[in-house]
View 1: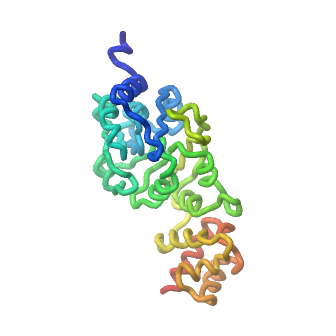
View 2: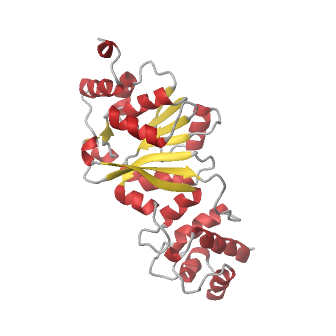
Length: 290
């Protein structure tokens, strides 16, 4: 009787999805997590608690949103699909600390949204991300003017491997450098395809990226540093000196001087460098342009 009078978020979601005849849209990466038991374990691993404000990207049917509202202080969910509005309204009914905004997160001002929702207080991200925006959203969060304290997200296993790669590895890339400049990534759990509705054709991992307590690199010009990261991996078969010339309009002597001042071999390729070495190169570019 109690469950009938006060159905669980999972039951509410399943009933609402059927009630409104909702059909998942493949192009929006809609592979929902509805299992409350699994979600409870993932939220426990994420470390969020009753003092936290949480941004959820892609709430889907709202099971995680509802469970976050029970665990956290405030929840802001950003959803692009208006077709989910009646479902989310039913699932989140009565949850005053959960708010849904319908917009494209890739076009939204996330800093403004979170500042309004959370009153300028710190915030975290917990999400079952649509996989097609994984790299773009991680880059946005890692380079935002107001960064989250942590980012706990479901991603494709290959994306997790890229984010956690190291210099010299094949997967070491601009995404890994940018994310690791922001925080430390680690895998929290492997999640099989059959945990999703519908099951994706890939393996998934729930990862967390915790913001560094203190910056691991402090570039003189953060924008030049980001441009340098992109330049370093733009043409992987070319040396960093050649990529510097193309990206910043340097001649051969200037490019070599920048690398020499940074203590980097002129023949090196960008994927061999650490965060600190890339930062020194970026600072050398700034000095060269002054």
